[in-house]
Length: 122
View 1 (cartoon, rainbow, N blue to C red):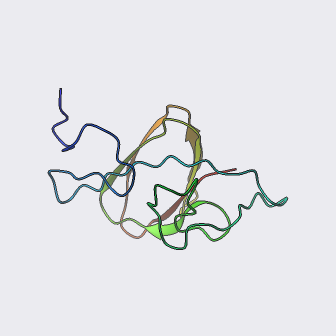
View 2 (cartoon, one colour; view 1 turned 180 degrees about the horizontal axis):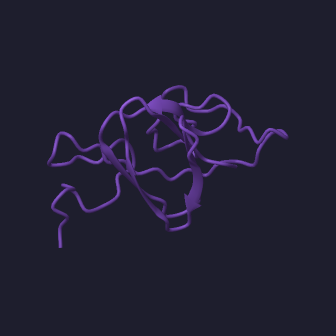
């Protein structure tokens, strides 16, 4: 049965999924991060702004030293993250933090003025 939200059935190799709703941003990430290069658990920088390059073994997305999405605002919308494989660390500017992965699902309501980050520990 075809999803009422997604317009294709196979996982994309790059970029966001096309959706029927212009307010949905649906992406798929599968990265093979290398071991950390130092005791700060930092990864070799890779990506150069090509967040969805399917030919790269991994992307840093918007992190400079730790892969992921450093603190950024979300204002008044819902995010749903399904972690099929691996681990994600989530933290926000009001002190909430957690680690989820290996099949976990996170539903987050983003409040106005609260910054949050998602990073991928090595």
